[in-house]
Length: 356
Image 1 (cartoon, rainbow, N blue to C red):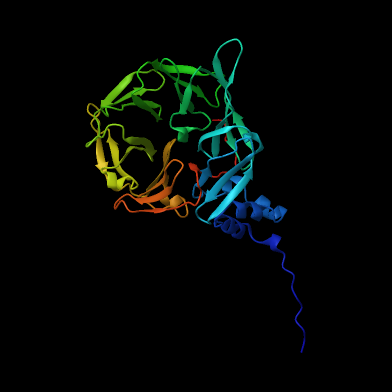
Image 2 (tube, helix red, strand yellow):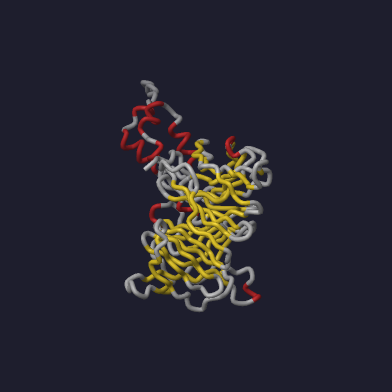
């Protein structure tokens, strides 16, 4: 019997269409990197920008910021990734967006003036690319908070609320522009409200009444005043989210002591059809959208674009405690993460931010 000759396959000669099909169906970013590392042909057949959108990772709170490591949890493959991000050494993370983590170094007090000088930057921990922001002098005794950190991208304003003494300042800088400093947008003494920055508009929410004033971000011109949502509760938690063109108010409340550990969210859509009297309309279905919320803010994703994302769900990181997936329609929830101190959502991306 004639012996069959063993045929050595040349995997580098696979058709480009087949390689692209394989690459777009890889479930994890680590598999995508290994795929491109097989050979030159495979690497050239897939650009970094071809990496398909992935389910957001969960960034763990760093217990030892003076170590250059960041820990992320992937719910799709139940893995914890430990990434050596050298430029994060000694810096604090403050939320994330666009595949970048907002970090800042420890404030230092100068001898000339009692101000806290902070250096902020956007860091992509996957490729260690850092985009520095201008240094910022905060007043002494300051506590700074990012406003809608999910809006951070090149060409968009970065906004901070500085709660110092004796009042507050709302300051911003514009990424990707020639502007090399921070500008004051608003200041005052009363701090019984929250700010949100969406769609070039500034939303000021009165915490004790729920009334919202909407002003143009650049000019400060008052656009309209929105009445509070129905069943408004003082000092409840709420989030404003840009969801594919709609502005959603996510209102977090607990109606009774028995529900202390059961987070319940009411969702309202801003109805601008009546320009003279805009209002909030309660909804229990947001279609193909899914909302991701953490202590820094929230963002929306189209469920069809991300493997593993369920439509009409809220993915919620309860600060330093739990990660829950909540059915908006029924309120049922389940735990999603084994990390002890989950901090924020992070959408992994390999490419750099590009100036607009």
